[in-house]
Image (cartoon, rainbow, N blue to C red; front, side, top):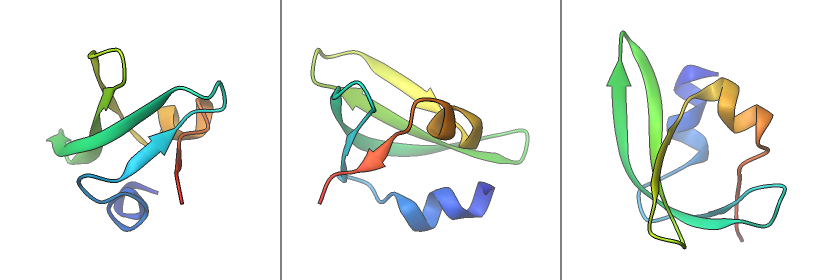
Length: 63
């Protein structure tokens, strides 16, 4: 699923978790060969999420 993150999320995409928390993808980060997405949440905080976290928190692109 590592490369799938690049296909699922683009920079400036609006995203939402299963708890209806909204954010925006601001960057990609590569750590030890794995791709992570950096999200700026509406409350101003940032988070970096890999494939496992995307699945766990059910992060989806908002249409």
